[in-house]
Amino acid sequence: MTPPLVVDIDGTLTGPDRGLDPRTMPILKEWDAPVVVATGKAFPYPVGLCEFLAIPIRVIAENGGVVYVAETETVVFTGEPEAAQAVAEEFQAAGYDLGWGRADMVNRWRETEIAVNLDAPLEPLEALAADHGLEVVDTGFAYHVKSPAQNKGKGLKAVARELGRDPEEFVAVGDSENDVSTFEVAGRAIAVANADDRALAAADEVTEGEYGEGFLEAVDLIEGGLEG
Ligand SMILES: O=C(O)COP(=O)(O)O
Ligand SMILES: [Mg+2]
Image (tube, rainbow, N blue to C red; front, side, top):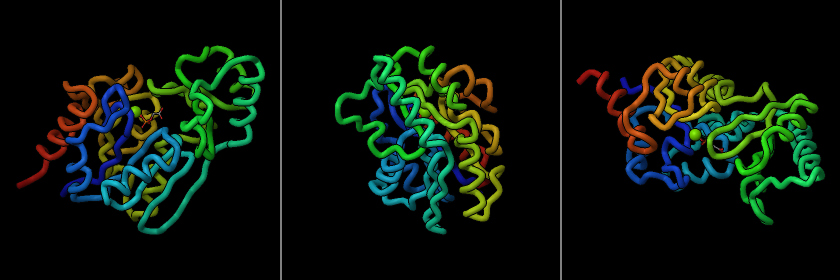
């Protein structure tokens, strides 16, 4: 039986430029079990991905801050949005920039955490986060200032509950430290070759290919183990 899949977006379904590898699209569309998209991106992005693929919306967004499952139409929020907002304001008051330009499409629809461009200095950001009881996670695409209680793995537990599944049934594919909690909760964890050290250490298997190529290889690994 095809296992349910929980998959990261940036660095796993995309190239380094954040562009979706089109070869991943038919796989997500035709997967013979639930597909859950688990990302650090704000909620509308994975919802949009599911919409455009015309697959049921099952989403873990904002590193577990927002979870939605189509089957039960349940939205679950986790996190400390006021504290994250305070960190963003104090960071800017100290003369730093979140780094996304005037319109800030990265945080505009973000509800539970704050994302900061990797060009920003990490030390003052970490110091302010710690002042508010928050942590900074580096996804390789952005720094995320979030509650330590908020992660994709907890999100996966919530999704699995809504789907009447055991989180252990899932196979997870990802590339960075924000996928480690998913890797720990899922029954099988595959990192793509471009993954950071923490994701590589937490994975059960690592592909030879990077980015979308690595995802295709992960799918071969999963399907290779299926009967018939
Ligand atoms: O939003 C990010 O920084 C990374 O997103 P991802 O979790 O889909 O890789
Ligand atoms: Mg990623």
